[in-house]
Image (cartoon, rainbow, N blue to C red; front, side, top):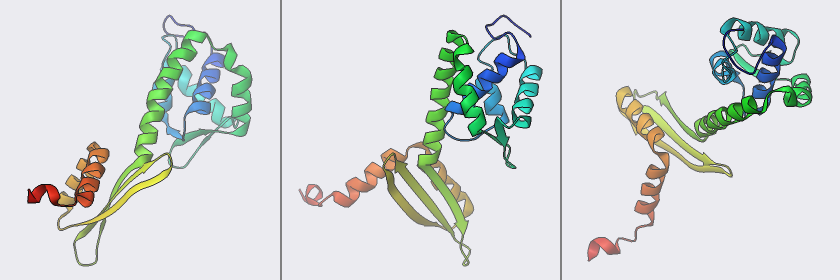
Amino acid sequence: MAGRGFIHDKLEIKFLILYIAARVIEPIPFDTVLDLTMCDDAIDYFDFSECLADLVKTEHLTLSPEGLYAITDKGQRNSQICETSLPYSVRLRCDKNLDIWNRKLRRKSQVRATTEQRNNGTYTVRLCLDDDMGSVMDLKLMAVRPDMAKVLESRFKESPERIYSQIMNLLLDDGESSKK
């Protein structure tokens, strides 16, 4: 083990990885598992890599063809049994990091922007905004150039709620304020 921390052996690293995998809201890539696991100074990269591979081998985790790790039912059961073995301070730090990461994942799934080329050479930009209840907005726009489509996607992703609000205000405006 590398530094000073609370995780002292490979079994505890495996417990920590399972703890993380059980709480993340969707499958995650290697780098994310690594970032979330490195919440304790005693964990080093090589021990982490070995433990992650072992968890896949023992079918506690799955590794998809896209390179995403997800917990299995077996891993979920073992995580619940072993989570109290992790030091409380490590769990607190891990929970804080997981909260941040899960918010990012939720946000990514709620704000989507895609571009498709049409047969006539123009582009359809689809802008979608969801909340916990379902779809809030699903808007398709035409762009004449791919760079314009990318700008539309980018600006929508920066502030989708503001754009939604402005569209609603425009559509709900009765025009009386501009007549006065």
